[in-house]
Length: 150
Image (cartoon, rainbow, N blue to C red; front, side, top):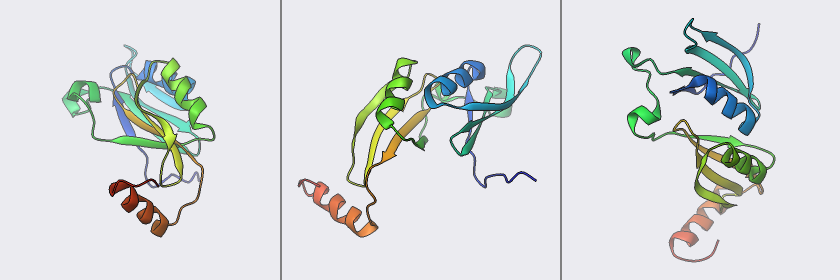
């Protein structure tokens, strides 16, 4: 029996086929399968991104399945660790994502950039640069909030 992860994001887009193409080109996603209606609308698809599965579908407003574009934005950010944040981030930008915050080193030990994909989903793309204990993270956070360097 295949072990299913205990938590998987399920995202809704206005054009799931184009989203699958974007995630494949930008994030190296591999499509596991898709369930397609005769009109081409995708009712369910699963992508492997690294070790994890992301489920997605086209909008189905009658069932409450609407995209961030329909909602006018999203409060959710998908956080993804990669080997080379700078390269992955630039590839996503090259394929139509919008930079929200440039890639830079953070006090908590990651190098991170934030972007908005063409389908309205926010992504935080990161590479772990340094293991930082919670105590050191708090010290750096406090110092930053007080206006000092981390």
